[in-house]
Image (cartoon, rainbow, N blue to C red; front, top):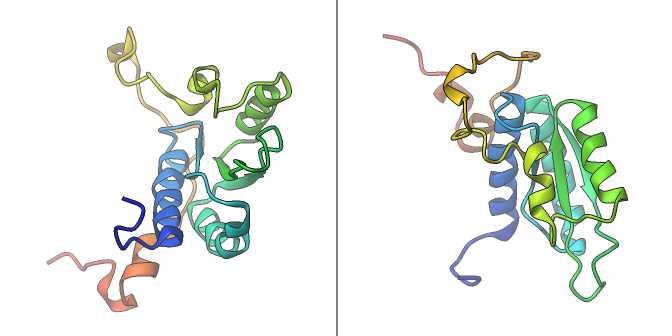
Length: 151
């Protein structure tokens, strides 16, 4: 599938956009971008930062120095509140890596909550709503195409 005609950088940025939306709307406490090669960082950073700014979330560049250099991949940690990043960094400081110990990160990735016991008793609420900008319209549409006026 690697040579399916996909532009890797665009694919990564599209996933960053989707996960940033999940984090900004508090469906996830924290998310990871897709893994990328260290040399991709300069190609990704400016647009990833722009997406994060539009979605009012933050990025932290994980360089994964615990992975052997011949296999090393990087990713962005996408978060809205500093304590989510701190929780991630505490797990990393204990020697855990999402590469080998993903289950340790499930709570901060918000995995398993949709079907959790008692989920029907949860009342949705935002901790903090933030005014965001529309990333997909900036990238895909001309200014007059979005928002669509109501008839």
